[in-house]
Length: 102
Image (tube, rainbow, N blue to C red):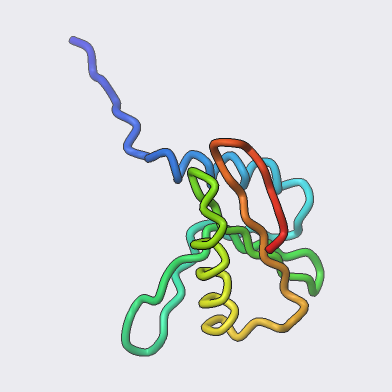
């Protein structure tokens, strides 16, 4: 009898993991799928938060080139995470494998 194990991760999760593995050597700490909450509810999720020394970089991953949505999420995260103005935001498009600063 054969047991088939299905991979339940979707395309977005695969792209997040792909970027995570690329970034791992460059940072001291990496966090994936970090929930952002206020006292009442879940506001969103940061795909990857990376730290090296005092520097914080946040990566938003999209399956297709939807930079407008990524910019909106970056604005919301900056406000709700109370990040310093030095925090940098990046957009990663999984389908084209392109990375750009927001």
